[in-house]
Each structure stands twice: as C-alpha cells, then as structure tokens.
Length: 173
Image (cartoon, rainbow, N blue to C red; front, side):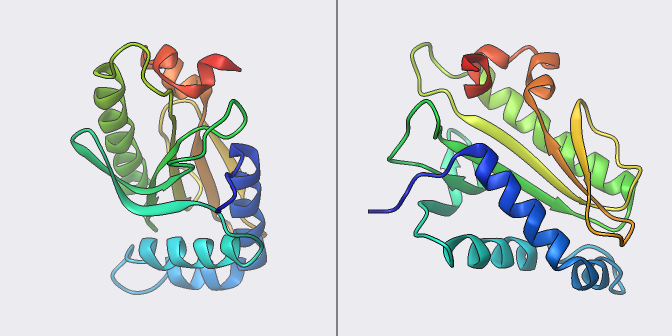
C-alpha cells in the first residue's frame, strides 16, 4: 500500500530536488519561448519522490469542477497527512508567474468556499517556480540554489487572507 506523505516532507523534497538540479532548472527556465517546463518539473519531482518510497499520488485529479496537477494522500489521510491538492506554475516571466499563481489561488478559493460542512479538509498548495519578483498573496519564497530563481509556495496565510482558512487543513494546525 502506498505511504501517505506529510506536507513538510513534500515541500522539503521539492526544495532539495530543485536545489540539486538548479543549473538544469535554470536552463529549462531560460529556453527560448519561455515557460513550457512545468510538466518536466512535475515528472522530475515525482520520479525523485517515488524513488525513495511508494507515495500515493494522482496526476490531473478531479476536485469538484477543478482538476489539479497532482493530488497526494487520496485514500490514506490523517491529521499529519491530509489530502494535498497542488497546482504548479513554472514561468521565466515574474509577472506571468504571479498571474498564473493568482489564478490558481482564485480557483482553489472558489472550490473551497463551496465545500460542504464536515467535508475532508484538504491542503491546497499553489507552487510557482521562476525568477525573483513574482508576487502572489502571502506566499513563501525559497531560493533555488545560486541561479537567481525561486520556489514560491502558498501558505496558511494565503487561505486566511482569502477567507477560506476554515475550509483547509491549515485550520487544524
């Protein structure tokens, strides 16, 4: 049976992988035409993550009327291992990255507002990868090695600012 993954472990592994691969991530970011490396990054991450242990995940997971890039812990949830719903954006343009992440936050917010009481509380996570200067609400920014790129992740504050914290796993911690 696949092992559930804790949110901190998921984010730590992503940060470690991006730092270890920083030069090639930078090259992917700088390819002519911009963007386009989101799926490559997701596949690299899943290969990296599942090389350690058999984590439970599903690509293109349907939630209400929204499809998310990756879901974790669909059948095996606990207070430490919630249903994690992720949306990813990779873009070499900070403004476009900010816009894309903001749109994902809006989509999550709309879906969260409609969750009925007593529903499993998911952990929505918007992930952005790109240059410094991206701006979306209440995110955490982490340097990716020394290549002048950042990993941006939504936080508890992102959902509190949007008025949907009580519909997320973050409200329990």
